Image (cartoon, rainbow, N blue to C red; front, side, top):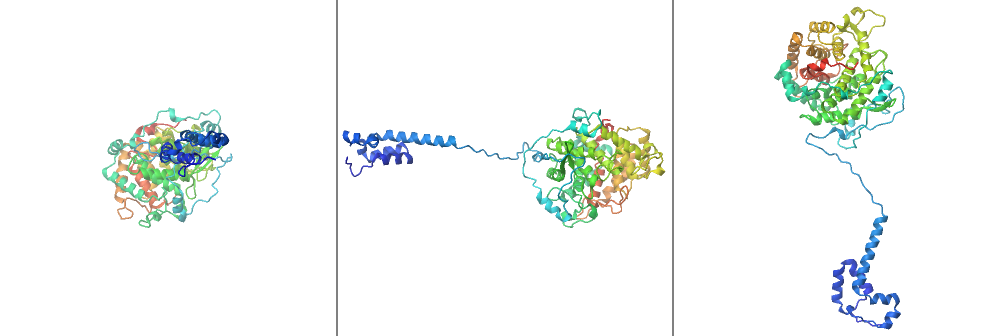
Length: 550
C-alpha cells in the first residue's frame, strides 16, 4: 500500500469538490496548497494493482476536473431535454392610443342555445330592487377577456326571417349620412342654425352632470335613482318600473351619445363605457335558428327596454365603429326582427299578435340606427312595419292611433283612438320609411302637430313632435321650438340634489302618466334640447331623406 504525506488529500475526493464549488480556479488553488499532488508518488506496482482506482489516482488533476465538468453538463442537458417546458399565457389589456380604455376588451361569448321558435328565458329571476347594488358588484368591469370577432350570420338571418326571394342587404357597402353632426364644431354650428341657444346648451351640460352623478358603480342606472344619490333628490319611478334596469340605463346613455360623448371621446368617456358594458353584460344571449340574439326585455320594460337598449348600442356603434360593439348590436337588432308580430308591429312581448304604435316607434328607431351604422337590416321587416302603420293611420296618414281597430274598418278617425303622441310617433316613422318633405300626407300631419303645439302635460309627445317638426323645419318648427326650448330651460331644477334634472308630475304619455320618474323626465327633456344636432337616430337634414331598403 502506498504511503502519502499527512497533508495530502486524495484526488478522488478533492477534485470533484473543487469542480462543483468553484471550477478550475479552485482546483488551481488546491494544487498550490498541496504541491505534493503535482508529484507522482506511486510506483508501477501500485498502479497496476489498483485497477481503475489506481488509474484515477494516477490521472492529472486538470484532466479529472475536465471530465467531471463534461459529465455534469451532459447530465443537465438530459434533464432539460426530458422535462417538458410549460408555457403560461398571460392575457393583458393594452391601450393602443390615448383615447382611453377600449370597450373591445369585453365581447359577448357565443352560447349555444337549443334551436326553437322562442327565446329561452334566463334561469335566474331578474334582480329585485334591493339587489341592484349587488348586481353592481357582480359585474367585473376591469377583467380583460380575449376579443373574438364573430361574423354576422346574415345568410341564416335571411333564410329564417324573410320570405324566399327577399334579399337581405348588408348596408356596409351603401353610402349613408355622416354622423359628424354630433362632433363639437358641427354641433355648435347646427345649434345656432336650428334654434338652440347658449342657455339650452347649458341646460344640456347640467343634465349630463346630473345623469353622471346618478350612475351606479356597475355602470347602470335605475328609475329608483334616489338609491344611488342616497335620497338627495326624490321623485323616483313607479314600483312596476323599478326593475327595468336596461330601460333606465339606455335612457340615461342616449343624452350622452346625443351630445357627442362616446367611450372614445368627451369628458364622460368612462360614464359611457361603463353604461355600454352594463347593457352588454345584462342582455340575455342565445340563438334562434342559428342566428345570434341578444334580448334586453325585462319586467316593467319588456320590448320598450329592448328597443331603447338596441338604440343606445346602435348609436354608440354608428358613432365609433368600435368592432367590439358590432356583434352585440347586430344580435339586438336580430331580436327585434324575430320579435315582430304578424301584423307587422311590436308590442310588450315578442311576437305579440297585435302591435302598438308606441312600441313600434322604438323598434323602428333602433333599426334605423343600425342602418346608419351599416349593420344588417332585413327589408322584409321594414315592409311589414309599413303595413302596420297603414292599419293605425287616420286622415290618410296625417294622424295615428295606439292600436289598430278590429278589421274590417274604414279610414275613419272615429273608429281609431287617435292620440297626439301616437300621431307624432307615426309621422316620424313615416319619415324613416320614405315619406318625403312636401308629401301631402306628411304636410297635413305637420299642421296637426302645429295645431296641438307644446304639451306641458305630455313630455312624451313633446319629444316625438320636436323631432318631426325639426326635420320639417319652417315656421311650424320655429314657433314650436321657441316655446318648448324656453319652457324646458326655465323648469330645469336648480335645487341642490336635483340640480340639472327635470320632473313633470302631471305629464302624461300616450295613454297614461309618465311613470319613470325624474330619470325618465330628465332623459326626454335633455334629448329634446339636443334635437338641433341629434335626432334619435336621425342626423341633420339629409338623414331624414334616407330611406330604408324596401
